[in-house]
Length: 485
Image 1 (cartoon, rainbow, N blue to C red):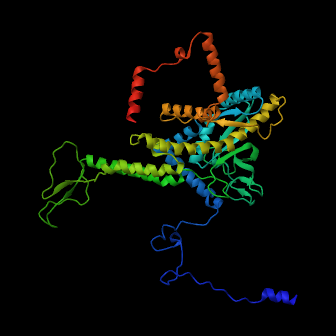
Image 2 (cartoon, rainbow, N blue to C red):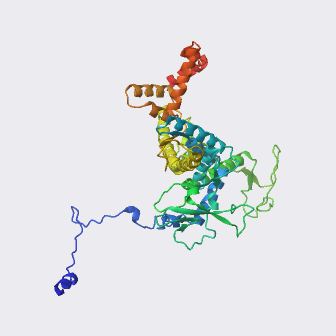
Image 3 (spheres, helix red, strand yellow):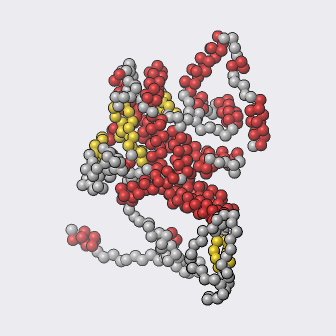
């Protein structure tokens, strides 16, 4: 035992590792330039801190960001257009359900009834609002509950609420597992949400306003997780808020300069020395001038018009650069954000659209997993109570299914059609995949095409008799555009 303790506590000689030497014999000490704090970069990195994700996105910080984001979007035309375009491109006219179980009749019946219910509760409109809330407020909340006024046999409804209503009140919580109104278990799974009865910014809200505790299974909470351990979201356009403010300030400054150049404004000055022969004039006095009038100056005084230095030649270029930087945080090309592709050629436009559409597809997959699947699970629970499926055993958590969104329109439909034909002939794709790219259900489209062909045969027609014919002027215009490309 003594030898064992001696071997543990026996002092060992300290090993000193020599620093590596370069060819000249000097000691090399590797380091990161970005980790150095110098006199030049001290102020730049002054706001850098080591807070956790939830501490960094504290309730007061998120409230400030939400208020500024809403203000900027409400007053900046570019910001408003960016948020609306992002919601329209992501959700479109709404998702469409395709069931993939082995029971074809049941699949078609569920798809039909779900689409009727979706239209009854205006699901596409609510999904677009939730997508806008994610970009503007940082997170979107919706309660799945029963609404007796839903014009459908399934009374399930999606009721949207703003992020301001999900809070623990005064920002104080005695539970270490609660993050601003969200109570979680030891594994970080949400258990319940504390929702205020009225909006804290509304007229009906009081300091002692009641709050309802909504179980997690009835709450939809959607936000982008940027850091591990993050439980509340911040606006997606947060990095662009200073840029949007600079854009508005620069526009107002250019406008003020243009107005100053157009106005008949000037300043009186004299070359005479102090107490000279010039008439006495009150210093800093303002004189109202009328347009198209001949004026006389006091003796010994001259008038010079203000030179506003109008930056007309750099305004458009500066605005373009600001928009390029502002929309990068939402992965949107500048031509889509501006609604203007005059400076683009075909190759540039298609390349930018491909990266943008890829981001849209990723976002659609995220929405399908976090929102649509949960809505479908709640809807099927009520649907199967009314229409019990016969012989179907695999029902929970969800039967096999997929979601379709609106297709992204191609810049050149003719080239895309030829590419699709080549892929099908070479057996490198399937009809299901090609229809999915267009946001359509291949079984529905093929059945519809079969019905059309049967009707054409019954009427003794052929495809050339029933296909719409383009106007001659339209065909010539499309040919001219193709030649230019």
